[in-house]
Each structure stands twice: as C-alpha cells, then as structure tokens.
Length: 165
Image 1 (cartoon, one colour):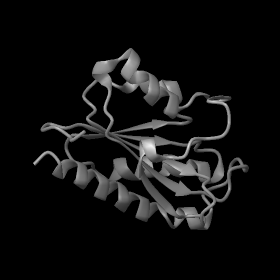
Image 2 (cartoon, rainbow, N blue to C red):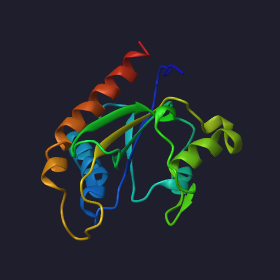
Image 3 (cartoon, helix red, strand yellow):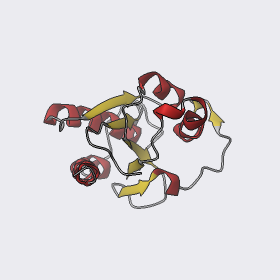
C-alpha cells in the first residue's frame, strides 16, 4: 500500500515503563512528543499493547509504526526495522497474560473493521538486555540506542511521506 495525500501516520509505542529495558517504548514516546512531530503524525503509548489499540484507531491511519523492546538474541541496543508481516511469529500461545497482542489485533482489524485497516505497518525494535527487574532504568546499551531508534523512526516517517508526493 502506498500512503495517500493527507496521510496520517500513527506511531504506537509499547512498553512497561516500570520494567528495565521493556520501558524503551515509553522513553521513545516521551522523546518523540518533546521533539515535535511532523504534521499528520501522532503518537500513542500502550503499556502492553494489544486490544487497547482498537480504541485509538479512527480509520485515518494510512501507516502505523510500532516501537517496542525485543528479545531476538542480538546485541543489546541493536535497532531492528522491519515490515510488520516479516517479523518472526512467537512460539507461545497468542493470548498471554497481557491479553490479545498486537499481532492478533492487526489480524482481526481488517475482518471486523475493514475501513480502519492499513497494511503499511512497520516495526522498529530495540534489542533489550534486562526484562526482569522492576524499578530500574534502561540498561546502558539500550539507553544509548534511543537516539538511533529516534533517527530510524524519523527516516521511516520521511520515507512514508515521500510516497505521497
């Protein structure tokens, strides 16, 4: 799908702000909002993602960028950028203690709300190191990767906006 004129890009930042590197989405959300976003770009913070996203979709989203911490086995702080549908599927059950995940939401939206769906969904992840400690900040390698993640988000926004010209 190409992004249409008058596009609206939604950046969905995921992460528990109380749990070490899982909080990277929360930190990126705050930095994005403090920096000023281009016209037509809005942000959303969802602590654990999932079904709550449906409450925030209004059909104007022509592209979605999901930002989250990941455990892909790479060096902590590594930035991963991918089309959503190219991400590896988790081996666990699709319903977790967090409820329905974003993958399942993106699968049901075109069925339940066909006018609110875009297939222009991108993922930007930051490889984390620590996901088991509450009340501690980001690990140094993940904290050091926040600026690169913001640049990657900026580049992704620019590429999406170029599609409309």
